[in-house]
Image (cartoon, rainbow, N blue to C red; front, side):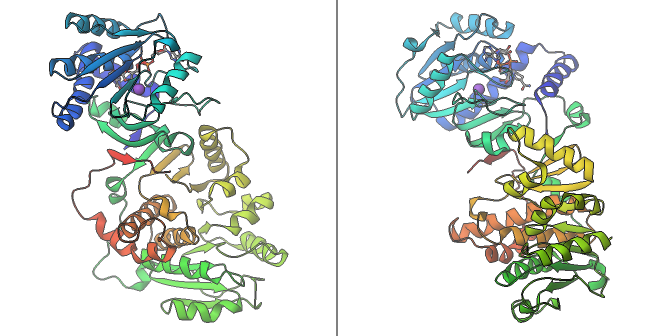
Length: 514
Ligand SMILES: NC(=O)C1=CN([C@@H]2O[C@H](COP(=O)(O)OP(=O)(O)OC[C@H]3O[C@@H](n4cnc5c(N)ncnc54)[C@H](O)[C@@H]3O)[C@@H](O)[C@H]2O)[C@H](O)CC1
Ligand SMILES: [K+]
């Protein structure tokens, strides 16, 4: 599912209005009725107090339309206009009049002394700002947002939590609504999935307001949300008359004394992702552990006992995953650098492999085209430098990817795979994955997919999805705390099977659990 920016959403609005020969006010009515239906089907006339806070733009207009329908159905409402500007939108004004015609007179809020008391069992509808927020709100409006957050009432935000910007990070202010639920129109918004802003959203859901599908389909986006439907189209089925040679040979290079487990996890990830053959290249101390833990894999050892000192092998792998547990001794850095200069095979680089790259940046140019790098935030910072906010981070990541023709898998609550000007936002995974070794498994999975013929980009997107899905299946039985990397491995098979189970709610709903 594509993720659009504000300008594109306004364009889609305009196109739809022209094509369907409706007015903007009719589109607003359609959007707000969707919100009303959502609330009505859940509340069934319950008399909990509903406080609607409406700005003076179209987000506020949505709130006024919703208020009118709630009033028509005898809900217990009170409407507040957050009077932050004199520039009221046309459709806001039309709907203000309509509401008054129904005998509902909103309270106008202009300063802190106007704020109403809100009970913790009440409901707050947040229709203050939507996608149109373009500067930091006035101080009293920020205080109002605090007031609403502090009320402990259930907060339902229309389209976006007020205070979040569509295309900029958070300014240094606490002026953002913390939404229990966001009902967003037509398309997901990028800020829902970024670490700095996603934390303002507990749950979100998309409401289809009938924007022109063909227009949205042809519009090029710079981000895409990856759910089951997206990865299914990448899935490479197995042929009946295939053999292990048909599914490639992964070579996992890594490990050092005390960190052989990382290679076991990656090699196993590769195997379970479906690589026909897997070989591990480790220091001598890794020989026995690997042969014991993973009899399906073959093992080649370095001449050194404790660290990798020279990467030499005679077999021909389809792809190499390098870096897990490898360490950063001078000997290993030298071996890594020499290998990189010689190597022409497709690469996945992780962990200390990334750290070696960051401290020896002349090696960047030695990466073969479409090398996959899988950094967590600290490793990313060492690669691309510091960033001001999440948007700046993604911009820098895209520039880096373009410059070195590499794929960056930025690991996090919503892992984002960046390739050139595109970002692919993953929807699977959970906080249980914040555990040692889960990254090693991912490196193995991506390597194993490339071995089978997935393009490096598809392997990254697909691998991140499957890895997260395996963890989601695992936590159902063990909970977040007890999830360990082996638990992710144990459920990779189920994650594959899940791809073909129906009843996918797609990615139209989600949770942010940071
Ligand atoms: N296709 C859709 O998604 C539809 C969306 N609708 C709703 O419309 C809003 C967007 O409305 P808009 O009027 O453009 O913006 P906002 O209501 O978010 O903001 C109001 C307005 O205020 C000005 N402004 C911005 N920042 C500030 C500030 N800090 N202080 C004062 N004033 C500010 C700015 O000029 C904005 O225009 C969308 O989110 C949906 O809720 C339609 O109802 C249906 C179609
Ligand atoms: K809002």
